Length: 161
Image (cartoon, rainbow, N blue to C red; front, side):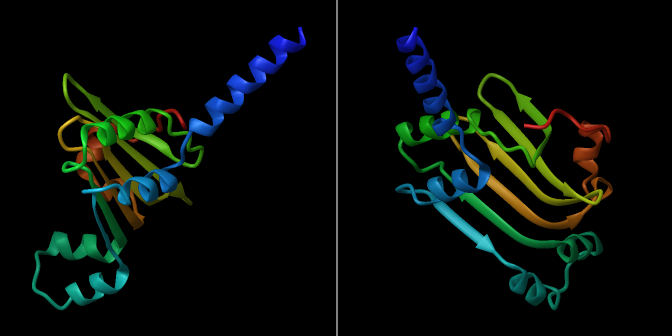
């Protein structure tokens, strides 16, 4: 009986170690060989306000405080497979799954972190085998600011992860 309890405990511990949060996922995979990582902060958006852009783009830039993109398309196949496994093990209680689009090759997940009815963070994860990537937007915006997502999302919360 003790042996069964030890084995069960070991299995539970190994499963919890595999679970990742989004911050750790981004940090780990941005350091992989051939991964490209770009982090644009608020200062750059303030400079961009000087440049002439459309009204919609200007409104969007006011609400975004940072954008981070991690592109893994040039990484090795084992790194891409590791990324797909890590994404499937994400355990993040503070994020809501807004949308999951899955077909033969593509698997796109969109997560949001909300506070006081405003989206503070939006994370788009593409898990396909050719061009895996993570895009994280931080700021303060609502679903009305994201018409394409609202159309898919329907304004109702999905399961928390």
